Length: 278
Ligand code: ATR
Image 1: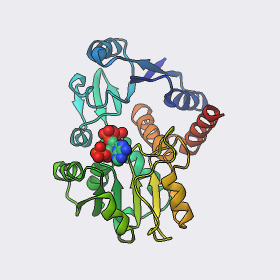
Image 2: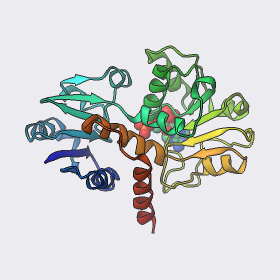
Image 3: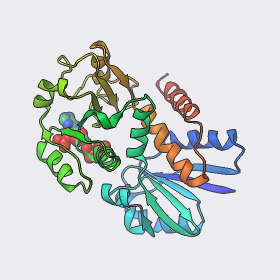
Image 4: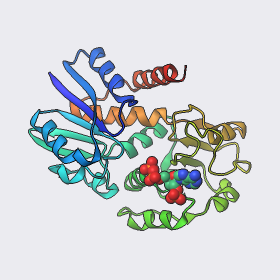
């Protein structure tokens, strides 16, 4: 039987076990996927135990995405540039780290038939999630990719650190608010607006053109205030369910060699979240 797990702290509310176990049942794969709570002080020794137990793969979540790196045998170049790993593959006893968060996000946008490469994209935020998305888009060849952040110097540093070529500038939230018409796609990567702070929003979207696409990595609530304002302006909106499903689908593909039914995964996530909020 194949063995998979997600490692985090906390981990009880992870949506990954039910999502992957549903796929194993659906495809008749003899495997299980469980959530493992690992305290940050115990990451090295616990991970060594799991390697010895011959797990086939892992997802790594908060707060271990960077701390796991020294315990891996190899690192994919994109994960190395991002400095964070969310997926580990056991390849004949070698544990290799990848980052599927950024590609998961991009796939979610491409799914909507968006030509990212011909557009100007604005990322909101400069934390770990923004870093994964920015570096992945830059590596893929998205040319116009600006970042706005509360702390502008952090956005500047993210751009400077990126090894892939793009045309980018770091701007403030108030500048972004005035210049929304310069962008066709706006990607919200901060935790602003996540439950329980559902009334919070990075900045006003009053100047947003109706033809914009606005995407938010948050999926709890399904529609953040940022997304609601975008929808009210006539924009096309997308919440974080797509990114979550695709990052999981890309991990599944690395472990098992085929790309799973992502619509089924999205449905599973929505069902779990619906169940949670009842
Ligand atoms: P993650 O790894 O989830 O992206 P993070 O690295 O802590 O988390 O980054 C959080 C992001 O949300 C940052 O862009 C942060 O802005 P700063 O760099 O200025 O700290 C942003 N953020 C979080 N709470 C915020 C708030 N209340 N107002 C403005 N920005 C906020």
